[in-house]
Image (cartoon, rainbow, N blue to C red):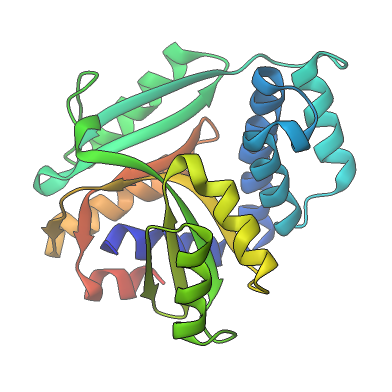
Length: 248
């Protein structure tokens, strides 16, 4: 897996603090609201909503918060309308950045994203400039201390997964988007519980980045993640281990 995947893992572990949890709740509520608006309020018939609700529950979000977000999405409660907008750009060292947002003010969001990139030697690109470097995939994370690697691999492949890799203390099961839920269900039936799952974009080719460029890139990634409008940031960066260690 790429260095950026490891950076993402570090960010998830940091989310246990109250400040990070509150920020994560804000992003999850937006995702639940939008998923409900597009696919209805029943997770059984809306895979995107099911994933969002499962993620919210694993983050210990109160059930009342989840229910209110669903009702705002279906129109049962008044709420803000969010628009899905993606931005593409470059970070230090020519690293590609693909940024997913949910915003109620696209002009504000693009200005914020441009400012963050400009501050740290990055720049905003045009639509299509970097999207071709990424593929949409499902990723299921499993605690590597709980399961035997061979048994986990067999269960994942049997369920329809494309690949299984390991990043530190986690197994990462990669799936085609169309079989994401099927693989999750198959692994659960085989007795394998996931710690986290997501639909994401993975890079086709890695770009190594180290030294000052890596430090600037991490500042960009941190600043983007701290913006409430930004849901996810994807990068093709293979970040130097020494710089990553300093971010933990």
